[in-house]
Picture 1: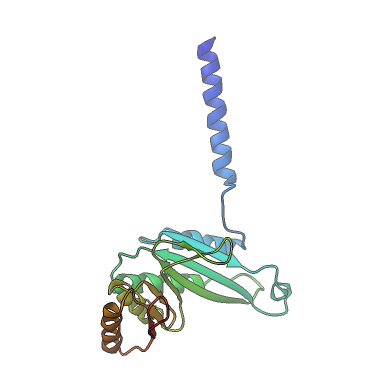
Picture 2: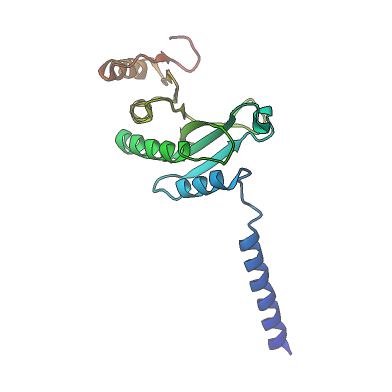
Length: 193
């Protein structure tokens, strides 16, 4: 009797596991199928740690009065070289921006993040030490951001770099000069900028 009960319990567990795997209640993609498919494919790329998409279907634009904003966020390892990060960011951005949803005009925005997430002042929102919204030159922008990050910056964003101290600030300024790039350089407390 015990053997039959054990077999029945194991069979029930197998059926439940298969149902949950097919149903996938943890699927985080709440967007049209082409967007979710692309998100999954990008998430499978080597060195993409996490993916997220925000498809603004509730906006008036989604009802045909303008483009729908699709915000893609890809988390990369902070240990990538600037060149590796640049190539990966460009590839992910290219794949994301190629997504088409029938009869809907999409406006794509791609964000690259790296480092350990931190709680922000906005409840439920995290910030990253390296947080970059990609523009027209994703390779160059990502390579610059990772160069500053690996040179010791504590925060890297679009056009801004924070250093932990004045010595690091001077090193980051020299890097900016070598890269022919003029970000805002500052200490975290804003005492030197």
